[in-house]
Length: 413
Length: 224
Image (cartoon, each protein chain N blue to C red):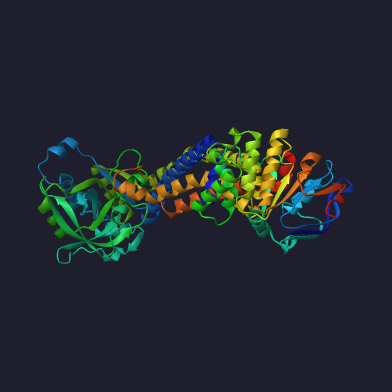
């Protein structure tokens, strides 16, 4: 407590400068963290796309009239349409199943969550990293009406693996009706899952994924029936999906099938998506990284200069402390503490932000969309702190130790 | 008790070696009020700095209450300065933007005195110098004489065995200087050893013992 008071005294020599520097450093570090997280996300999705997809993969988008879909009295008109087209596609030798993405909204612990329903093939295609549990435990059959699911997002941080939770599905617009869910796995950051919501002339890998704060189920008739029993309109199927061409099919068969797909959908090939994704990564790195790096450099030099200024402002006081029985070692500790504080506040705020972002996002308090915050982000922040604050402390100490108390007294006399 | 033997302290001036202290030996018993006199550059402040563990001699021995000071590491000499020595300097050496009570409590920031006890001891020290009603003022709001009293309060707050004063009245008028010297005499009567460095004969006359230094050597000691 005493040393803390002396450290505050160290900084109080120029309060406004300290406040401005702390604020600037925190803000610049935050901007840098968010930018790096955004670029990392785009790189991550590109890498996941390349890792889990083969060159004979196609991303298909169904052309439909939204008005027609809204007015349809069917429960899931898009799924019906896709199923109809898929039945026709099955006649082609090069056909392989459409990997569709279905979702429904539920309520867990008073908060609205999204739930994805994937085919077994989708889960096998994208075995995303889990922080706990295993995809193997995700089963089609329920056990005593308890469905298995993999959780995603900070909502389920407090839930132990293997626990059974209740998830509410809206019952025809009225009271919620619960379904029992056993958590068999927890998705690792960035809690990003296949989410085919985007179509257009340019499709990049990051558009094929989306953040999920909720649950991932394996598709089964039992699950679909259970949810539909609660509400007929609960499940929505995306009009976009991925599919692969059978590699063993002949070139002619493959071409015929691709033509069929192009006649029914807007199609983007693996090569097109990869090319655009690579271009996007390059563009993002070139356009977005320089400014935060520049700002970080400026604020780091400001921190270096201010640390020297603060040391010079406090040198006389430390000569007095020395006279009152403060050892040089302790004086150095106070000086180091003061300089570290200037950078540490920003560092701690940023580390807390990165650590708690997923929780804040899960609760809808903060959502930056398509960012990757994980332990690597904390490591980067720590590294930046080590270099900038470490250098400032070192320089401050060098300046401090150049002057002995006796020399200062003589100067004063 | 303070005992120094054959102290030598030199400084390099270009190629030459300047002897600030040249084979100085001295003993100060407990309870003495000593004036160390001499002209500017005689070596008085150098001797005081060594006695106060602010500096080290190039050779010789220094015993403070039978402790060989030169053999101690920095942290141990810091403890000595904190517990056994009080300093009063010409420029007061206060933290000007801080309040009087903070300045007086300063030595206790570097020891194990608990927070409540710090305030009690500071109040006691301020009372001893007659400034108990000024504790909430900032040091730079006080007159020169008051600031020097605050410095004296700080010097005695940890009940040191010796108070070292380097030209304590150098920045004060004669009347204020008188009151400061009276204060030193009062402290000395309470058993604190006081060593004052001064070039002023009148100030030196307040002391029981006078030592004169010239060119780094003791040329006169009224005790002998």
